[in-house]
Amino acid sequence: MLTKEKVINAFSQLPSEFSVDQAIDELILLEKIDRGLVQSEANEVIPDEELDKELPEWLR
Image 1 (tube, helix red, strand yellow):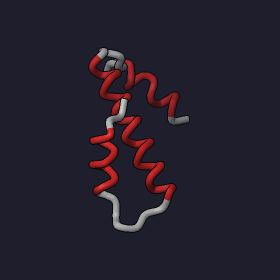
Image 2 (cartoon, rainbow, N blue to C red):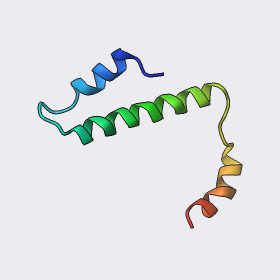
Image 3 (cartoon, rainbow, N blue to C red):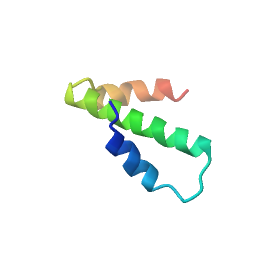
Image 4 (cartoon, one colour):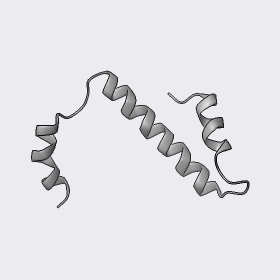
């Protein structure tokens, strides 16, 4: 879950003027990174060998 601190830190790095789309994109990126870290810590990842097999299908 995102924290206020993470959001404030990310927003403080945006330019002085930014669009709502830029703010939303930043929030989405933060959420995806946070979710990925949680999944990684819970060992909910795809091993490299399996990824090498599945990636060509995903890129079709």
